[in-house]
Image 1 (tube, rainbow, N blue to C red):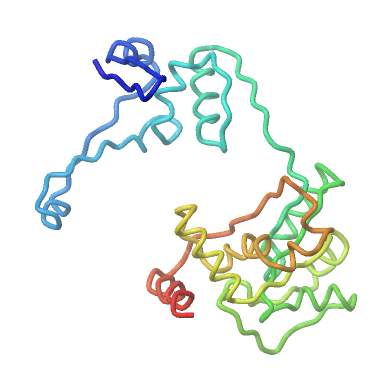
Image 2: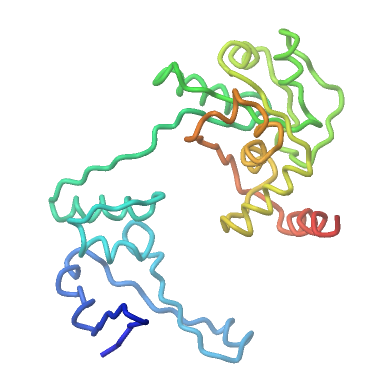
Length: 257
């Protein structure tokens, strides 16, 4: 028996309080515990990894949700997805309520991604605000939007090499007419967003994909009441194809400065 009591709060638990095997065994698949000779060679220890990543819905949360499927839950995504799956397997209604996105922030380069996103989003909800995030060293879209005609840059300079392409004749009219505004950020802000993604969110993203978060974290965004008035913001993280060597070098640049 395990006593988890502290001060005046006391909870007495045993395996029978928490064992849900009999309830979930017909729904939750077994997952392997794996050992690696490479890890043994590296550490000199036998490390067994319980691979809950192989659980239905992609994580360990499916165990708990299969047992507590009658509960109300708050989640950023993983738990509620697991709960919905568990409810479906047990033929129990699940009601999912999610935030209403008011503003979308999307990276821009040649304009293909933003064109698809803005047309789709505004077709569903004409009131949604769609903002573009663009590097200051490759700001042809911002310049084009400002002067009302397509501008092509002869030279670009940004760490976000995936965003160096210019808008074309097909994508420019869509950006001109449907995109609400364009936020430009410098490479330092992009690098800070990359570091935040890696250190806090545990997601390694390429500079071009980090630019949406960089825009939200920028001083320009915070000071602009037209941009920062939304509480529910969707950011498109467009890719994770990052060279690890370049990533470490980029992040170390921030540390050195």
